[in-house]
Image 1 (cartoon, helix red, strand yellow):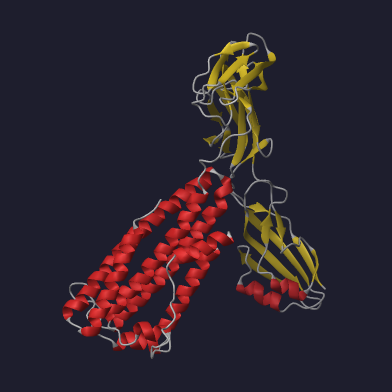
Image 2: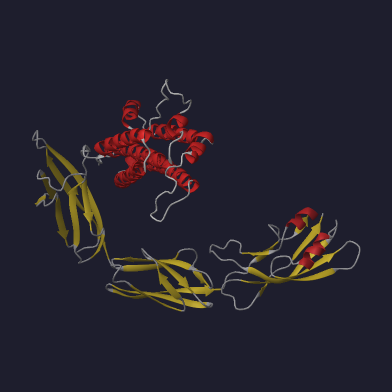
Length: 505
């Protein structure tokens, strides 16, 4: 992939030199407008280059998706695009800042202060934005070239890509690159110069992407290892059903006419590089076929043979339904289960349920959602299979364990007690993604000296009154958490949990 960059780029550079010379002679409105016209042309050129770069980047990414060995080139190409885009956006913001500071745009969307030299001199020379731009250009060139690992190619690329910051001529009275390029230059002249830098960035990006795209060329890849491949429509067939298999030479062109294939000694016609084998087994058990693929070298006439034994099993139709996590279904949670139906095409299999709602996912995976405890029945039929049912017990979620942090009861320090913000209901050793929550509880503080203090708390988080009591905790106090009630998914009414006792040490 390439773009017509050389003629257009040369024209842009020549136009800029001519207009700069004219500007030095006489700054007229026509000349300034010519600069704006040139700026528009450079911007359009950059858009053409950017579109070409996008197409190259897409091509590199597609090659990387098809061939994993090119993934690192795709990553480098993406980085090159990001580096170039960051510089392009930086210069766009600089151009917009110059336009805004010089009066903005007129009714024709053209800069008002095209003759203004003070703004450009102040921003780009005195305030240092020109020096910053110089460093950005150098950095962009360095970062793009750093993506090329081959030192010889990198040296060649250095001569190809633009973005060169030329030194200030020795006879110039200007002491810096910024002063030499921007001092007392009107806005109309600065804008196309900045656009040229943007265009140079895109051209440099093009050179880098073209190199990476050439590196992803796979036309040189020729198969040097061969293997006989048998691709059957099924490896397990039902007695009396037809078995269809495609036999072909892997990694070989479909247009090849130098291949012969035999199965158990019988020759089969080769069409588009493959042969089609069919059989109807009449007995149960494991079967095997011997495949021989002969390849004739079109240059030397040498014949090489590649063998493969294909094994398949002949059986009867059957079906199995199994819960993925436990042998029961639980109310209030998603219960995954699998259906394995040997000899039944997936598009013919029918699944129904009683006492539970089911959702079909993919590849024999289902989800059961029971609404109440009891029994559920899953029935599978279709594809010649008689209706077969499987029953499951449906239970409520187990009663959770109340915990204060990671403690169920026992000794606890004052600092640790104050650090906790509430109690929680924990489902121990439960494989499902379910969460119970505390509805309310009663906390009793029993000081070593004094009367018990009882607090009622709504929810699992400590309320203000509970926190005030805990804040007054002293050593040897005893805390009782009792009358704990919780609710789990699928619960209609709350459950009472076991109490907890903590001694302050």
